[in-house]
Length: 520
Image (tube, rainbow, N blue to C red; front, side, top):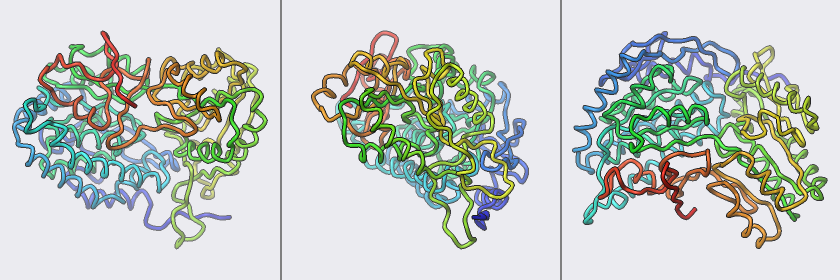
């Protein structure tokens, strides 16, 4: 079937809508940085292409260290003023920002489609989760801060510095910033280098219009670390990303007692043992491929009891055959709705090439090439650039030397390990030295209850996946997957405020001297 691009959704039209919606933040040929209280044409725009079809788009305008230091100094001064604003006024301004974001919901979602390749439904869900979550905190913040009690919580001594990943700009980064602001902190945020900077630019323009003390700048992490991580006046560091960058961020903290929460990758595994409800598992497996598994709570490793492998394989291959992927804006006819896809491209062509190489590497190491999909099965426009797309693939029994044996692929490349004993199951599920989530599929609930405490995962699901969660649900990681305070629900507010103990308060989380876990 010949497909066409949905009218009204081109990149040029989308960018024109940004220019009209926030002319203070977007120039015809570049993005601006929100520094020193306003939008300025500072920084050098880099070259960038959208993963959707290789179209060139304005890249992040990268500032140097002097501009970053000036921006942080300004944010520190703004924090001193904002931290004294009464909660009622903070709540009104955050609520106004949320409603402004809601008014531009579809444009924010379309930017996520173009910048990071999210299918339309998932892009809209990312924006909606941000807005719904912020509204929940607006309704709960008075209780969370303990206002009227003998021990109210207070803002941190400086702004929160946010260094986030590209995959969830709204539901993770902007959502977190809105809570930080509501709790009385100014915000400094760095745009991810790989994507999301247009969406974040529009969001922060609307937040700034609502009178919120936000700073947004772009740049190379290695050059800006001194300002964004080590600046003496900062109150906290919020980081989302890979373990290598997370280790560098943790090492760069000038003061280890400074509040920090560093969400890092982990190999999330799904163990299958004495199990029979294959239709239910297949539904979970299908949903797990949303956004091509480019999220921190995706399950790319299945640890399967050897005797169950025939049934698992039948269900798993049926799921792979039913997946829909391709260009997020390609439709059969102009009047057709945007496609219902499981995933579009991965974040960029280099990542797609890396995943193909890792598949070949596993096979060369004597893994079984269980499935290797073809781009011919995807939905694309005639002649479009498909270099950032990857069809689903899976390997069986990868070697211990495989580069992905202990880490997540962040793409639709699965691995399956067969085990014969409970001890082997545990070892294989804990191969990543700590993770955010894990799940066990079993008919024997007593077995699940017995084995769950031995899994190095913050959340463990039984016959269902676990996720980051929203609103009241807490979030963290075990082992190397998390450093610092846990977040989510009341814990997020606690992480960005001081209780009576001040900087010495003992929070839930992983710290150099202790680990303390909430009910999860």
